[in-house]
Image (cartoon, rainbow, N blue to C red):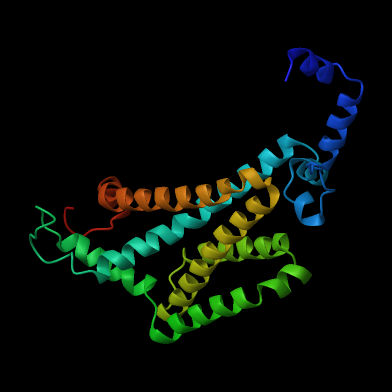
Length: 243
């Protein structure tokens, strides 16, 4: 076709109208009004619910501290049970250590008698945790996570105070079971509260904080048992012979 005819088509008055009609047939993206589920994970909803970002940071810091405090006991008890249960500690020298381990073996066996519970208490602990998890929607709806967390923390503090006294073995094992459950529940409820508080794109921080806290507490427990008792044993008279 002639270039003049092409220019006439481009300069035609009807060309913009035809282009607009074709453009109207193309489906366009429209922003839908947010539903309730979308509002709960948005940054604006977080500010409306908690007031300011500084308030959110303060609560996240408080729950993070609770997670760290809760896993101090659990890491120590897990380390004692694992080390005494596994055949790693023997009389004299062995492949993992070049020193005498009689004092350490005696300490772990004695402590494991307190941490490790009998069959009945062990089954009761697992059943209680299972029932607690299944009934979570009920107590979360009527009691609330904050009230459950407060009761758990107060119970854990009371059990920690009871460990100061010389108690019978059965009572001491029951206290250790309660303290172990309180530690686990405090960490889990705190992690859920952090997830509920943060926007959707930041909720991975709750799992990251939980994982970092458990790993760090396990490392601290290991260093405490293998190095800390060198300083504490002369002061607390833990060992009857040199470490």
